[in-house]
Amino acid sequence: MSKNIRKNHKICFAASSGGHLEEISRLVEIKDKYDSFLVTEKGSFDELHFCNNVVHVCQINRKEITFIFKFFWLILVAFKVIIKEKPDIIISTGALATVPFCMVGKLLRKKIIYIESFARVDIPSLTGKIMYKLKLANLFIVQWEDMLQYFPNAILGGKIF
Image: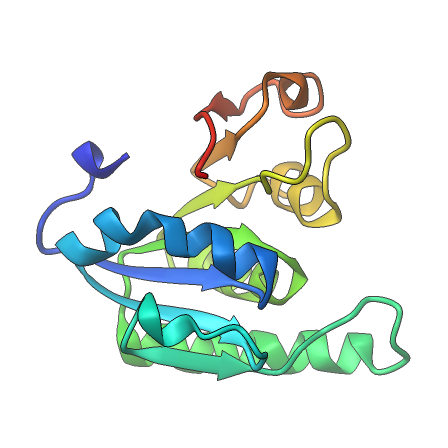
């Protein structure tokens, strides 16, 4: 993946807290080669071991009554962060809190790389479905061959872990 990224590119890593953040933290070799920052939800996972520049956003759950308000708020936050930080590339492992960043990034002509969760062996995630259906990702990577039936234009990238 890093062969196509120029040395002067800035990367935004975007991941919800928990397992998604654990997955993206496995991309430390890419992070170490480029100017980068992390967007993640406020949570208990210690993400500072992955990235020193961290932007925290509110947690979002589609089953909460405040979901739609938080989603639109995250769109505004995404505009502010992307305009301030000026990333060239956004790499996301999901989940839902990262979709507004990918939407805004796409609108602002940033390159988007989405990596479907390692935990999704045979059923796609909601975030993956949204990212694929809306064609938000310039590069859509799955970690399991069975996922290609749901995302036929994806690339089988192998496992992050």
